[in-house]
Length: 401
Picture 1 (cartoon, rainbow, N blue to C red):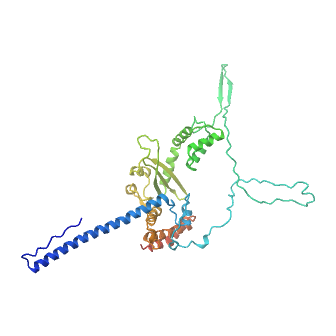
Picture 2 (picture 1 turned 30 degrees about the vertical axis):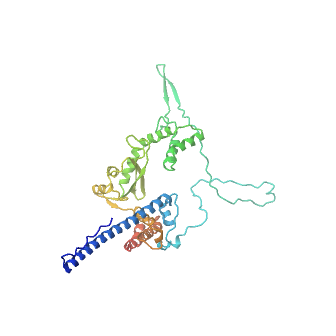
Picture 3 (picture 1 turned 135 degrees about the vertical axis):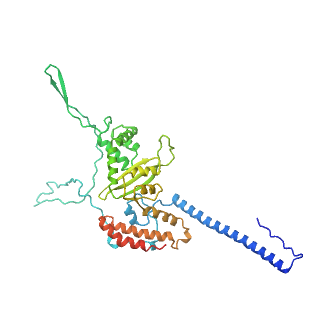
């Protein structure tokens, strides 16, 4: 709605008064224009920000889920289900020429047991030959399908006659089971644990496997095995936690998980799996700890006893208090930092793709650091430190955004 200006009254006024009134009106009009310009500028900035949010949301919904920039980065982190996406090649450093991957089939591990399969000539075909010999023509990896059996534990009992004419028995010791009432062997329970937590196989699929092999064991029974065995192994978990705290560095992160049936909590609410990596350089361990909360109390509990070291995290607000109480030095994570620059790059308008943005430049610097890490990942800690001093620090010192 337009603001009407007051009419100028000329009656009984001098020329100076009229000019003063006109100047005042023009000044008032300029103020209105300035305020409207500020509103328009703010609205334009708001629209640009909302457009970035929309582009980023569409990319997360319909675009590739990979955060990979180059093939080298994927090798560095060894991530599964990587989907390559095109990047601006002028921002990426050329890969070193002396580290090209060798072509051809990778040989099998020499530690694998080997069995030779011979192809013989008949006596008629060898008639008149002065000698014969064998040559290896190919190698095949062979896996024997699961062998299912039922173990029947037979306990021997010896009967002795007592001096009083009675009888007494002596029985052989039977190998103890960690879960005495379980109908599965130690090998089977181990197979279930490895399949579920190392291979990501749900219990209902393991149930179908066992049924196909002839063992009708419900997933509820399998779940009870997992729960009962976790209690048996708690002392080992405690020792692994103490071992983690004996090292100089612990890396920690927390990720969302969904738990369908937990008393007092919604099935659709966020629960958390806290993951930590630490210990001595050549004896590191990875531990998973479930908690329905992401509060700082969980971080304090998991890091209780770890003092005067380094804690690497994504900078979540639960960690600073622990670092202060335990005298820990907080260390950042390049992967988490890079993620925000990647989102900024994905939110850029397509029309301006030809122009190098700050997000593009930041990703280029981080990619250079990743290439250094790729080259030194199999070297000793002393060599890694030296290379980082010579190559990584100059890259960081040259950052100009």
